[in-house]
Image 1 (tube, rainbow, N blue to C red):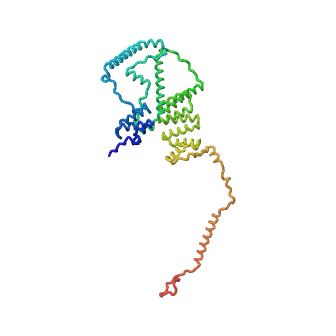
Image 2: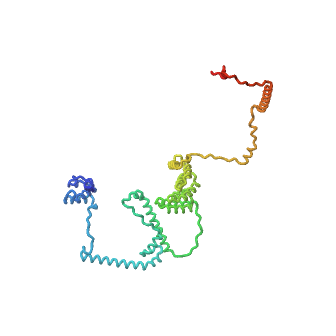
Image 3: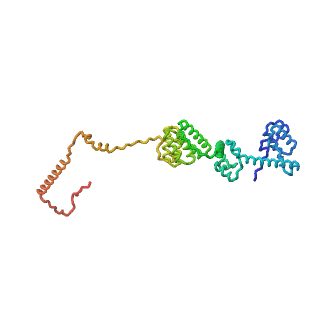
Amino acid sequence: MANKPMRLLEKYDILLDHLDFDYIRRCGCARKLENIVQVLRSGEEGYFPQLTTFAEERLRAVLPGSRLLRKEQPLATRHTLPEEEWDAISAQLNQWQDEMKTLAGTIQSSGTANAAERPELPPVRQVLPVAEQSGLSGCANPKKGAERIGSCDYGRWDHYDPEAEMLKMDLDEERHREFVRMENQKNLAKPKIEELPPKVELSEAERGAIANRMREKGNDYFRAKEYREAVEEYRKSLNVAPTAVCFNNRAMAYIKLQRYKEAIADCDECLSREPANIKALLRKAQALVSNDNRREAYRVYGEVLRLEPANKVALSNTSQLRAQLPDLPPPNAVRMAIEEVGSAQQDSADDIDFRALVKPKKIIKDRLPEALKQLKADTASALRKSAATAREEPEIRLRPETTGTRRTPLIEEL
C-alpha cells in the first residue's frame, strides 16, 4: 500500500490557526510567511483568495525579493510584440552587427602596425579555428574536467575537500597566467642570437631562499593532492640546495604515489643528515610495511621508541606487527654482541698447562694388583689342600638298603 503524501501544514509545521488575518499581520518572519503563502496557494485547506492576496502583500512588505513573488512573463517574439516595435528592434540589432564587423576588420588590419609601434602590448586577440584552439590548449596542458559527483553519492561527498579544490583552481589559474605570459613573450620577441652570460655563482643564503620557495610551492601542490607536481617541485628544490626537510617531504609524496622504494631512499637521505628525525623514521617504517618488509619496519619502530618511548604511532604499529609475527622480540630488546676469539688467542690458550692448576691434597696408592696376586695364591693353596685330603680318606661304598619301611625320614617334616 502506497504511503499517503504529507500535508503541507505538517511539512512546514504550521498550525491551522496561523491561517488568519490577525496572525499574518503580526508575523514578521519571512520564512514563516513564505510557508503560509505556499499552503494557501496549494488549496489543501480551502480556497481563500483574499487571505492569499493579503499574505502575499505582507510577504512583499517583509521580504520584497522573495522568489514566491516572481511572476512568469512570456518571451518577446515576433508574434507577441507589435510590428512597429519588432521592426525597430531588428533594425537596431542589424546596425550593431554591421558596426562590430567593421570594427573587427579595422582592428585586424591595424594589429601589425600597433605591434610594431608599441611592442610592450600583447597581440590582438583573435578567434582561432578549432584545430588551433585544441593545439593551444594542449600546450597549456589543461586538466580534463573532473567527473561530477552525483547528488546522492554521499560517500564521495564525505571525502570532498572544498579547500583542496579551491587551491587546485588557484594553481590552475596561476599556471594559465604563466603560460599566457610566456606565449606573449614568444610572440613579441624577435629572433636573435645572443651569447650566454657567464654562470652566476649564488651565495648559500640565496640558494637557500630559492630552494625554500620551491619547497613551499611543492607543499601547496601536496595540499592540493597533486602529488606528481609536488615531487617535481621538491626535485627542483633539492637540485638547488638539498635539505633534510625537503627529502622528508618528498618521501611523503612518494608514499602517496605508492613509490615506496624512492620513499625509503629519501628517508635514508634525511636520516643521514638528521639521525633523530622522528618523522623520517615513521615514514620509512610506513613505506617498509607497504613494501612488505615488516621485520625491518619493526626495527625502525623500535628506534622511534628508543627516542620517544611514548610515541602512540610506533606503539600501535609495533603491537600490530607482533600480532602478525609472534616470533618478533620486544621492541626494547637489545642484541648482545658476541666477539669471536682470534687464532693468535687460541694458540696462546693451547700453550697454557692446566695440570699445574690441579693439585690433589692426598695421593692414594692403587692396591688392586696386590689383591689380585693374593687371591691367586689363596686359590692355589686351597686347591692343593683339597686334593691331599681326597687321597687320605678311604673309599666309601654305598650299599643298597634293606627292604622295609624307613624309621626316620630323610627330610623331617616340620
